[in-house]
Length: 354
Length: 96
Image 1: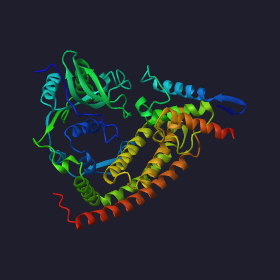
Image 2: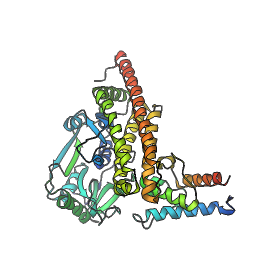
Image 3: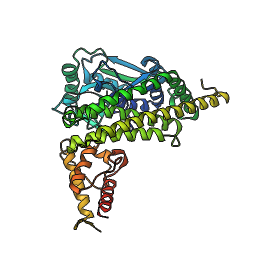
Image 4: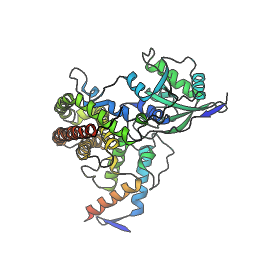
């Protein structure tokens, strides 16, 4: 067995944040196997979400998958060898890399030196992508970012001992009886992994993605429009949260995180449209929606970081939310019309995409 | 080039160096040894939407400007030099 190995063709993904940290670890794996991430992106329909019974800061957007995780992996032709807990993390990871299988592990950022925002400061659940090792230097090659909010994923090294501490720290401080896999190896399901549709690099794939996206969106069409009503519910809460300095002192940080989750979801929607329809994609409404959410975030941030509070913050934010709701309706109306037309055209040309 | 601001003069070089100092100060909590140049990409420096707001509001108070309603937005600036140019323009606008 070699004392070091680094998997090639594996690159950090910094285009967007998608749902949660796992995907920024997983997307490089998908690309490593010469697959497209589009089946994952189009599989989720993103809707607003408001759960009255919960603390409202806990509900903002929801990613609703159409295919199950198992079906999606099957479609991608990627297999997994997973463990709820790895008893020998470093040995397992080395063996996996030697078998050309990248590994994703769940860790606690508290033990990751490159994470200055959390290292020896706070316990944060997170994933690391392991794509190499060097036994001589006692290091793993990982893809990781330097701050929870930063798209600065890059290739880094972590010592065996820090990786082990981070992995065990997750089990001891965050989830001591995990019901999910904290260690997963990935490998191609078939020897010939380059079938056209899954590779996603030809026109047929794009047409197939558009059709699937159209089907998925139409399946959730009613829900997408219904959930726009959440924006009205948000308005009441935001009005309250920014109604005074003391309320903002109390809620500001939570409000910023809440707004970040929404803005990241909207950026993901935009990214999906551009990937499907190219640079000519009509993103006018979604760009304005993002601008309006950004405006509210900037006002809250301005108070938190500079103490600048303006009495009209509440009214201005409500106006922006009203605009967002209107723009969301316009965006969805146009998108559904476009998807219906394109589906008809693709089907009428009789393109066999199966 | 010199800019006239309410009777005082702020040189371009000063705007750049003060801005880079602001960025270093905001980032120092996470990156104590960070080096900043005008050509640096904001994202690569580790600036995100929230640290951008911190940098912008500090710049507002330091330079006596105000970012436009939709300009307090990380995605509108790629590099440090773009932010420097924006501040310069706001200073010019406020001096007119």
